[in-house]
Length: 401
Image (cartoon, rainbow, N blue to C red; front, side, top):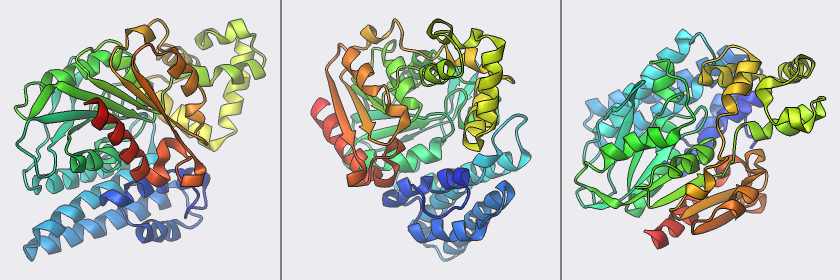
């Protein structure tokens, strides 16, 4: 997006809250002010600037509480949670940075305080999973909190948390009359940071546990449950839909066949034969060495693969990372998706490179939505015009459910 931060990685992290502007997660002036505070500083400067802004909002919330301004207290705590969640992304990696945990705990405390002040208070509801428990929240439809309504379950990607999904997805859904459920699964948010649980490919098992809990709620219509995934969730959601058949609809923003598919052309370019590139985990050592050098020469790739990818998948070297991501694929599963499925394609999003091929292979009722830079929605997950994405997706879902 390129708004306020001098460092490319900082700009990627620091402009994410632009997606939350329509839903109360930030305002543009606040983001620009943090960018000025960071200047040409390092990751510590980025962390400190966002934390200072979050602390300021949290202090304002406490002041509003003393003055019995309930609506402002709620709004300020929720916004503080978005600022804390932005602060620590440059600090990703194992072992877990103590500053990341400090920020995450402040984030979740602010998030919980804000949601507890909703008209119908929302409390955390951890979902049991064999490897631990998934932090989750069931957010009722605005103005229809006690009615039996359709539910959208939102699933995250590689490095967002329940706070990000709340602002980017859930607020729009609840305003439209849907109940919304946000959760952190294995390798995400609290499951990764606090419990050390890595990501797993069988997302149908993960979502199955979420659906088990959802159908027990008296306000959820069990026949109208949709699953929506953004970023890597655009792979995880269809994967879940291929095995969890209680879903009435699936949304992938953008649809992704696999994780490893993005690396195969690069492996060939670096000397692997097409046959060898078909199994990245077994690349010849010289090709693996060239791939490692390529990754480490690019700070953005180094963060995405080494700091984030190794940590999320619970590995400590490139070969094991490649072996891990080879398991995240729709090979042999696409025909098992039966529910109506929506996929998005943003014109400038590299993760959408194979979405149309994936879409063409679907045998279920399906719909493709295109987004362009001309409408300010051409970037990854349409983050600069998130309200357009939400409106068009919810229009489709209204027709399906």
